[in-house]
Length: 68
Length: 367
Image (cartoon, rainbow over all chains, first blue to last red; front, top):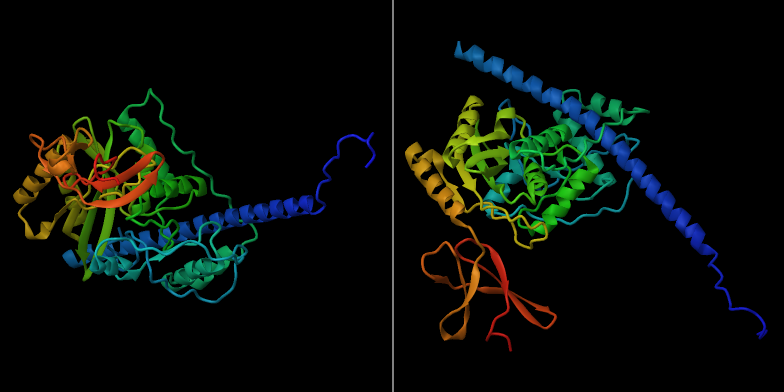
């Protein structure tokens, strides 16, 4: 080793940036998937809420009819 | 609570019996990932658990895979929709294949301000829950194990505010506890109902609130009069009878009412929630009897003004004394758990009066 040389710099491992990039991509994909699932869930919930309301209304009419 | 009109799942609890998912067209969001999440039971007696797994005759589906939901849970959700909706196939296809779906807004988590009155604060919390919406999809998105320590349930509540998805009644109770933590003048306690309609039993739970001498509730339900009630009821009985009268409108007869203890305000407590300190078979009781039992219980709850204290009992053993008991009547706890901590050992035990868990360093018991 050259005694005049400065302190040895640690060389970054070549695989690190690639691994970090990969993780960032995975996180972004997970986030996108969550957002898509959330959008589908609320779209579904709107439909199912309407169905439940229709069933309830028709049940109430049935009860009123049998009451009369 | 499930609607009065015919089947439909509802209520609460986690299901251990997952309906098989239908293999079918995959949605843009059905990307498989490693199944996660643990199993768990909803607690309670075995008979009750089995009943809750099929609330109102319909099975419970619960997401135990976290977020995003894994492929199996996702497909199972859609499979259920295709079975229960008259146009299930078309509905599923339309939503799952849509290139673009409107991005639902994320309601802001309410923040308490000193200028708010307690009723206003409770209203803000209830409004937030309504904005999340009642979950009609048939799949519960957050797993709630009722026997978990409070700290774990509060983590789940935090997750609810992060993921911002529709919720059902049990989730609303946990969320209500989380959002009212830190308001010491607001006492929270669970109120559970078991009702009967058209040959089926249904379960529902709301969060009872006691503040400044008045009772009210927070919660979520298919029916708007089976969830939040204003903080105006002078007695616990008045509140419970209000729910009973609401149930009658939907032809549900209330069979059992279970009232739990006040939930501690410490979000990191390892204590589980006590769900059924008082159980009343109201269908077999006169209203006057129900009122008497409820008021006695409510008085006892209001008397719990301080924590249990450890005293040195006879023979050098340690014992737990509850401040509401006259004199220093001491209840003998069972030492159920021993934990090592720095500098000594802590014993955890449960007061047999108020069921609060307390930690102590025994004077003589440690070797």
